[in-house]
Amino acid sequence: MLAQPPCTQAKDAAKPGTSEVSFSDANDHTDATDEENEATIHPKSESSLMENGIDTLGAPSSSLELENNVEEDKDGSRYPKRLVAMVNTAEWWSLWIGFASFWLAFMLAFVVPYNSGSKRAKYTVPQPMKWQRNPFDAWDTYGIVGTLMLLTMYGLLYLISLRYIGKISEAKPASMYCKGFASLSSLALISFWIGRNAWCLDHGLGYAVISIILGMLVSNFPGKRPSWLLIVAKDGEFFVKCSLVLLAVEFSVIGKFGWQAFVVSWIGSPIALIIGYLIGTRWFKMVPQLALLIAAGSTWCGASAISAVGATIGSSSEDIAVSISIVAFFTVIFTFIQAYFAIAVGMDDNVAGAWIGGSVDQTGNVLASAAIVSEEAAMVAGVVKIILNSGLGILITAIAFWWQIRSNTDLEEGESGGQKKRISLLLLWDKFPKFVLGYLICSGILTIVLPQLDEDFDGEGRGNVLRGTISTMNKWWFAVAFVGIGVSTNIRDLWHKAVGSGVIKLYLVANTIDVGLALALAYAVF
Image (cartoon, rainbow, N blue to C red):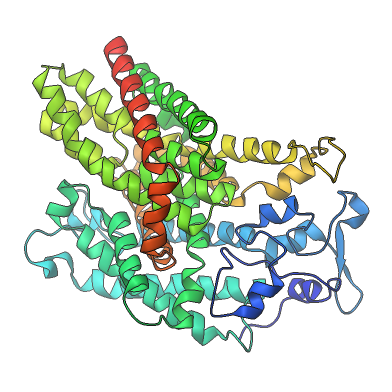
C-alpha cells in the first residue's frame, strides 16, 4: 500500500458533510451507500460540483473569497485548496497520467532500436500489427511482452491515482480495482487486435467501435456482472481524459498544408457544429449536452470529438456510448455513398478528396472512402483530415470556456432572485478541464522538439517515430476507456434513447449540413 499523502490527510479533515469526489458516473447499483452519499450532487465531473455550490474537494463553497481557499489537516497545517486539488482530484490526475504516458512515448522513440522505414519504426509502442488472414501475424515477441508491460504500467498509474484521490478503502480494496482494470485491458487488447485486421480497417471498423461493442456484449450478456468489473468500468470517462492529453500535435501543422485545406476544414465544420447544436436544442428540444455530442461527432471527427466534448462538459457514459454508436453506424454508410457519388458525377479528384476529408467523420473512413475515388483524392483527403483533427484541442478549449460561462450565466430562479451569477477567473480555472491544459503543454513541446528532430535525424525518421508513439499511447488509453463505456451501457436503454431522444434525426440533419458546406467550400477553393 502507498503511504497516505499529506494532501489526502487534509481532505480527510474536511468539514462534516463533505462528499468524496468520484471519477465519473456514480450510478453503481452494487453500492447503495455511495448512491446515498452522492445523491445531492452531479457525479459526472468535478466541474458539476461547483454548479451545485460544492467545490472540487467536496467542501461546501458559498463564495470564491480567497480566505476560504484553504483546508486544514489533522495536525492543523494549512494548504491552499487549489494546491491540494492538484494531488487528490481526478481532474488533475488525468493530467498527470497523460503526462506520464507522453514521456513514456518520448522514451520509447529514443530507446527502442529500429531502422528507418522498418516494421519496428512503425510499431515502436508495443501493439498488434496489421494482419489479414492469420491473426497471429499481428504479434512478435516484442509486441507480446511489451504490450503486457505497457498495460501493467497503465494499471499502476491508475492505482496510484486511486490511492491519492482516496478511493481505495477496506470496502473497495486495491485488489478489486486490479481485477477490474485487468479485465478491461484484456478486452481492449482483443479490440485492438481485431481492429488491426485489414478487412476491418478497410471498412471503418476500428478498435474504437469494436471496444464499445465488446464492452456492451459483456454488460448485456445474461447473468450478473462482478462488482470489481463495474466499479472500474465507471471510470471509462476518466480514462478518456487521460488519453486526450496525448492528442497533442504541432501547432505549426496548421500552416503546412495550404490555405485551401484550412478553409474546407475550419470553416465548414465549425459552422455545421453550431447550426446542428442550435437545431438540436431549439427545434428537437434535446438536452444541450447530448445535442452538443451529436453535433460535434457528426461534424468534426467522430468518436474522438465525442469523447473529448463529453469529458469537457461532463456527459454521462450512456450519452457518450449512444452518440459514438450512432455516428459510427452512419459513418460506414457515408464512407461508400460519398465516394461513389463523386465518381458518378465525375467530380475532380482534388475536390472529391477535400469534400470527403472535410465531411466523413473517422480518419480511417476518410482514407478508405477517398481511396475508392483515386490516390490523389486520398492524399488531399488525408491532408484536410489532418487539419481538421489538429483543431480538436482548440475546439475543446473553446467549448470548455463557453460551457463554463454558459453554466454560470444561467438565471438562478428562486436562489439568486433572477440575478446572474458572478463570473470569476478563479471559478473558470476551477472548472476548466485540466486535460486541455495538458494538451496545450504537450502540443507546445512537440512544436519545439519535432522540427529539430526532423532536421537532425532526417535519415532516421525520428520525428515521425515520435509522432507515432504518442498516437499509439493515446489509442491504448482510448481502447480501455471505450471498453469501460461499453460495459457501463445497457443496450435496451441505449436503443430507447437513440429512438426517443432525437439523436438519429439530429445526426442526419447536422451531417447533411456538414456534407453540403464541405462540398461547396471544396468546389470554391480547389
